[in-house]
Every structure is written in C-alpha cells, then in structure tokens.
Amino acid sequence: MANYAGVTVERKEGVLTAPSGRQIRVLDLPGTYSLRARSPDEVVTRDAVLGKLAGEDAPQALVCVADATNLRLVLRLALELKQVGRPFVLALNMFDIAQRQGLRIDVERLQAEIGAPIVTTVATRKRGLPELLEKVEALVDREALSGDNVWHEPSPAEIRAAHAEAQRIFKLCVKPPERPDTMTGKIDDVLLHPAAGLVILLGLLFVMFQAVFTWATPAMDIIDGGFAALIELTNTRLPQGLLTSFIADGLIAGVGSVLVFLPQILILFFFILLLEDSGYMARAAFLMDKIMGGAGLHGRAFIPLLSSFACAIPGIMSTRVIDNRQDRLTTILVAPLMTCSARIPVYTLIIGAFIPNQTVWGVLSLQGLVMFGLYASGIVSALLVSFVIRRVFWRGAVEPFMMELPTYRWPEPRNVLMNLWTRARIFISRAGRIIMPLMVLVWVLSTFPYPPEGATGPAIDYSIAGQLGQFLAPLMAPIGFNWQMTVALIPGMAAREVAVAVLGTVYAVGGEDGETGALSTLLKNQWSLASALSFLAWYVFAPQCLPTLGVVKRETNSWVWPTVMFVYMVGLAYIAAFITYHVAVALGAG
Image (cartoon, rainbow, N blue to C red; front, side):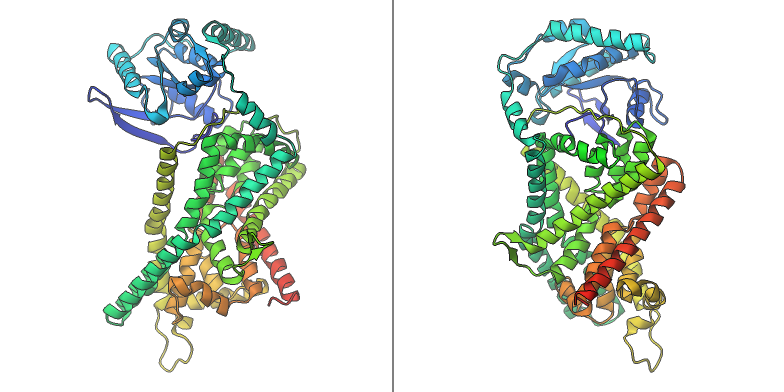
C-alpha cells in the first residue's frame, strides 16, 4: 500500500480469472530494487523469484510493477529479472501521471533493450490489466522458462556495470518531461522544511487525534444506544436466570463495550490512508529521520513504528526492511510502545469518563489534547528507550537513510474505502474470534462459584475472578488499582481492547449497571481520578498483547527478546503508573 519499496509485511495472495477463463494465482512480494538482497524482506523476494522459497513452487511468470515516473530506479532490477530465465513482463504503472508530466517513454525501444514485453497500466483505474494478463498467459503457454538462470550474486565491478547499463537504457528510452512536475518541488519546499515541516507534521497529527474524539461521537452514540437497547430487550423478554445473565452481561455487554469504539478507529485509519496515498507519508519519514537518528534508530525504522500505530504485529514484521540486525532488534523492542489501535477503546473509555468534554482556547477539545498527550508519551518513550539501548548495549553509528519520495497525487476514494472496510472487518473479526470467547470465560469466572449460604457481600466477590483479583490486589494497590482493574489486565493479555470488555462484564455480573452506555459513568463513580490516570499510564507502556510477543519470538528466532521486552515494559508500566498515581494523589486527585 505504501509508495516505496520494501514494505509488504504480510502475505498477500489472491486468485484472479484471466480473459481466457484460466485461474491465475498471484503472490505479491516485498518491494526491492535489486535481487542482491541486503535485508530479510529482500531475501524473501529473491528466493521466491529464484524458486528457492521454502513451501513455494517456482513462479511460472514474473511481473515487475514499475513506477513509470521513476524508471531510473527499476531498470537494474528489470535486467536482473531477465537473467533469471523465467517468463517476465514489465508493467509501467502510473502511466497516466507520466503522460501528464510530459515524460516521453519509448516503450517499443525499451522493450527491445530489456528483451521482455512491456504493458502500460493505471492500476487504480484497472487500465491495462487485461492486456497484462494476456501477455502473462501467452508467455506461460509458450514455455515454462524463457532461458537459463544466469543470475548470480554480483561483484562490485558487475554492480557498477549494471548501473551503467541501466543508465544507458534510461537515457536512450526516456526523455526528460516537457512539463516537469514543479508543483511537487514547490510543495516540498514547505513540507520538508526543517522547522516548518515538523510543525506541519505535528499539526496534522494533532488534528487527527482531535477528530478521533469530535467526529466519532454521533456514530458512537448510535452504536452505544443500540447495544443498551439490546441488553434491555434481553433482560425484559427473557426470564431472569443464568442464561439471560450470560447473554446480556457476558456477551452483549462485553462485546458491545468494545465495538462502540469502531468509529474512532476508522477515523484514525482514514487519516493514515489519506496521508499514505497522497505521498505525504514518505515525507514524514524524511522529516523524522534526523530525530530518530539522534535517538539511535535507523531512518527506515519510521515505517515499522508508523505501522505500529495500527498494530505492533505488522510493525514488528516490517522491520525486515532494516538491514542491520542491531537496528532491527532496537526497532522491534520499541515498536509496541507506539499507541496501537487496540489501545483506543481503553483510552477513550477512561478519557470519556474522567476528562471533561470541554474546549480549550475556544476551539480545541480537552479530551483530544489528552489523547494526543498519550500518543506523544508513547513516541517519546520509544525514542528514549532506543537511545538507552544504542548507547548502553549496542554502540555504533546509525546507517544513513535513503528513501524514494513519490510525486503527490490525490488519494483514490475507492482504495481508501476498501482499506477502511478491511480494517473494520478485522476489528469486528477480532470481536468474534478473540473477545467473545474470552467474555464467555470471564462471565464463567465472574459467576461461579455461587456465594455460600448467609454471605452478605456481592456475589462476584466469591467468584473465581473476584478471589483472583483480591489475591493480586496487594501487588497492584501501590499504583491505585482495585481488584476489578487487576482482573481486567489478565484476559487483556490476549488483546488490549479486551480489558474494556472485561470491565463491562465484571461490573455487569457484579450487579452494577454494566450496560455499554453506562460503563463510563459507572467507572467515574467507582474509581478515583488518580486510579484512572494510573490505568492510562499503565497502558502506555504495558505489553498487554501475547500475539505481539509471539511475533517477536518468530522474528528473532529466540525467546530471549520477547522475555526482555515483557520484563522491561512491565517494569516501565509499573513505575509510570506508580509515579502517576502518587503525583495525582498529592495534587488532590485521589
């Protein structure tokens, strides 16, 4: 989805039907400019192209998708792919932009020079795709291989010769634009300015978090009211008893308390997609490079860290684009400190309950300011932790950062909508696959065993969950957590947003008004402001996500690094929550 090479981090595979009716399996590989792989990401591409990828059949045909406005960077790869000996097609994508800029590409001559068919495409509008499929089919039908594989790891002299050959072909087949894109340069003079550019970037992020609160409210109220009505309907239409409690308090209250935050998550992704598709995201990486370099992070770490705002798992996986192992490990260890979308339900629940919904300076939402502060805390802490890692454990210079800056373009509405739908489906799917089964478990633990005869306290105090929470309560008391908060952390390890659902279920089973619409009000009455702020501080740092730890183990091929990550993040979370709680109490927020 991004505008630069090396960012495909999840397996993207699909099946399409060619004009002839043939079913074609398509595998998308990580972007690269050469088969001389330097990063783990590029190794995957090289091995797949050469038919050496474990568990994969050798490809019957290769399609190199090139940016027609930036051919200079891709021609060397095209020459290498020709050496592999497999049927190969070069797709000149974004050809409409090249034409608009007045670029003159002699397609026939370029085709003769590289010795492979070329198709011009505009993928966002599906132009040229039928022709591309026809070319691929014709090559596959003709022969499985178009020649012997003569590619090998090049020597320095061969690399220089390949560069020279690519330059010769480029000068021969591509003439400078008659109408060069001066607009991109003029915009970059402002957006890439060392001072003004950073101010604009921070301003965009600030507006984004303000919108998360202000724009989402109407949709959240509708979802909130729907689940509240559903709970009321369940309680009035079904006979009171165990089954009704299970449905209303376990399933509806738990899952509904998480799904209500879907509008905020979609608004966040809406902004990210606009910035990415417009070409601005690469500029943000450029602007952050100097800051990140000062903290001991490689410039390429910006992409994994940015991905971690959605979810730390793809963020950690995308560290494969970083060549140096120490740089990769540093980025992996700090990636979960970025505020992922799973934290949004926790943040917005607590902020909505304890931070007044009022404006500051007449225009800014106070709740949005607090949300911005939480995101900023995650970013600053990641930079500080990486600084300590590089200065204490892995001394050495950070490698320079090189990145292709694409031309600006209007985001494609269809692409934005499709990606928003994908994110909504993933979030709803998590509610079904992860949250709902956990809510069943939490309901059981909060309901059984029943209180003994003559018991005077709430029934939930005698349940397994109540007893477990009270057993751990002394450990968490110094940071202001009650037993309900402590219980929420345990199943919350499966996914951070589960903590909200657990609170909804525990308070509902406990006889409180646990409907989704009243949960924030209930917490305001049950918790002190100091405890609420401590809970937020905990979630800025705590590694409340077992799948993330599993991915760290897979990416590092060791249990050492996920263990290190868990220990240091729990330690930071406890210290931050302890300081926050006691400072708040001292200021009279207890």
